[in-house]
Length: 75
Image (cartoon, rainbow, N blue to C red; front, side, top):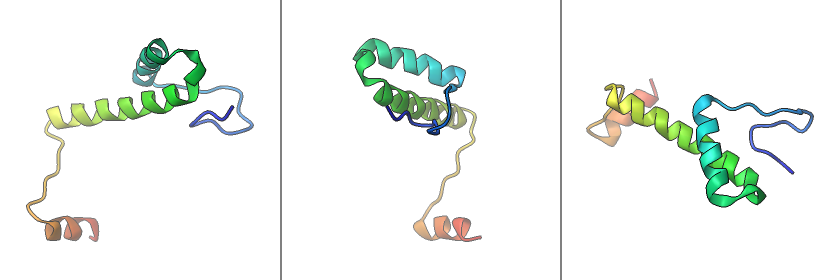
């Protein structure tokens, strides 16, 4: 079975604490038959948690126009 975030020759997979929490939640919801999907969902939810925390801490970049966005990303 192919596991996201794990190379073919690796024997272990690691999780951040946040990913592990979401992984366990996913397993409880979906059952163990869909472990690969649970890993993907847990990692996605962990990224969302980080983004939410950054927004709460005011670490958000906003642009008033697409031109401002282009200028910032092409700098």
